[in-house]
Length: 155
Image (cartoon, rainbow, N blue to C red; front, side, top):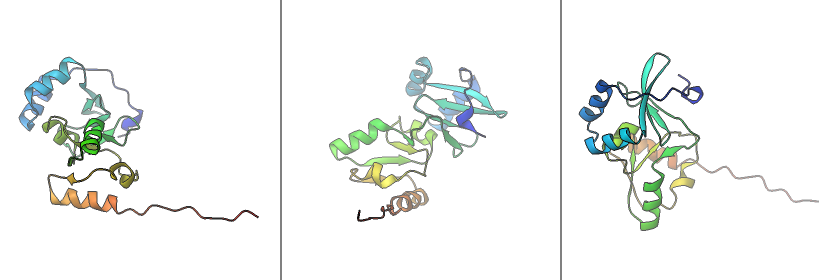
């Protein structure tokens, strides 16, 4: 599924989709607010129903670990990242956009692991995750060495 090339028509969530989000643990006031402000919607992509968030992510409700960036932003939760850096507070890093919604959009979700994450997270005092396996993946991403340029002396 190439989510980057898809621009689905804005569609309201169906009642079963809305109810599935509530059942998964998304706060009803948060969901109602997102729905009323059109910051959450659904669409069909390659025959699959996908939930879209205005922050720049899309995910399948039946497989929440399958998600995509819908913008060039490598993560969602910019406000939480800035608050963590400014106030030197721990930053919660969620594994999926659904987990982020269940936490009332507190923290961030990494949408693209290809970016150099030490650059983005260098000023965050502490990173928190909800499970050990994801914490290991995050730790590995932060240990990625920075490629250094070749130094030449001009003649």
